[in-house]
Image (cartoon, rainbow, N blue to C red; front, side, top):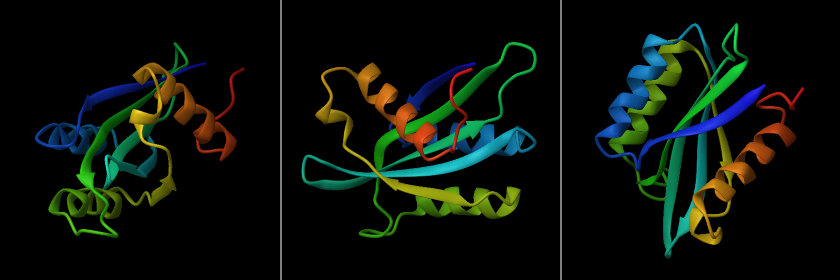
Length: 129
């Protein structure tokens, strides 16, 4: 199985694309995730949608808007509220995880490999076959 993050942007207008992916693929949404981190002294959140693997192909996409939304526990945000509305509409709870910021990693790809490890360890996505 191939599991890969697909970054849409940082959560400004691209958040609406993330929400459309969730609405239009509600039958494939396996998880909604809010990754909370601290980036340059700002409390930020990355929002992600994990889809079920394709069949055939065994490809599991994880769409993400990276670190552009204020942490809703610190500063309420209409953008996070829209993600919550999606969660309620498709009846999939939001999983919240505290992580290191992408700034901690030398390359963005290392950041995403780290997140895949966290998701596997927490059994949010299946391990490699």
